[in-house]
Length: 254
Image 1 (cartoon, rainbow, N blue to C red):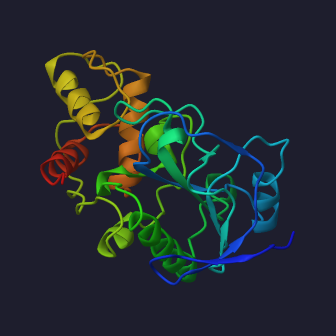
Image 2 (image 1 turned 90 degrees about the vertical axis):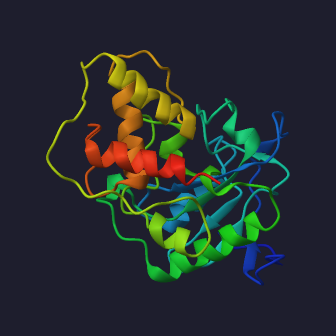
């Protein structure tokens, strides 16, 4: 599949090839205030790109980043691309209408979590900075697909270099608190400490109800948080490292 045009990132000078996807519609809910990152989860760049441009797939994204760093524009930013699916962040229940979506070619969990090539991450950083220069997207709304769809989605995964992006001005991140032995909370626990944990996760933006019960949804949300912010151990257990890292993020909110 060949590209049919060329564009230039308006703020970065990034070269972006155009590969229009038919899969998009009207934005219907609120401002464009989320930047959502995905991995393709497919073994081949071209196979993933073909799927995103196939009208039968009913999926798309605004941008696609090849493993070699080439960047494609699939859907105009003013249109609603179809990449988030059933999702929620804060008060936004239709994340697709609020988000710019970037698909990053990577085999993901189905492919054994391969590393993201440096040249690809360089391109992702440049593309994100280009998008952020045009839209009022706060750092804490540069998100993983797994953040807005906990349990249902795992991408871009626990090997995605969020710390590197933050150093380059993309996203919200703090150094994770070290993992040590101590008290932890897990599925089946109940009571005020669980209410406090759920309230902190909801305050950050995760779609979780404050029930006081550490249920499956809470485990999924904790694992999604770890996959983004405490990547060394992703198990859905709220240990001291997880809770203290969450507190530090809340304190560092812009």
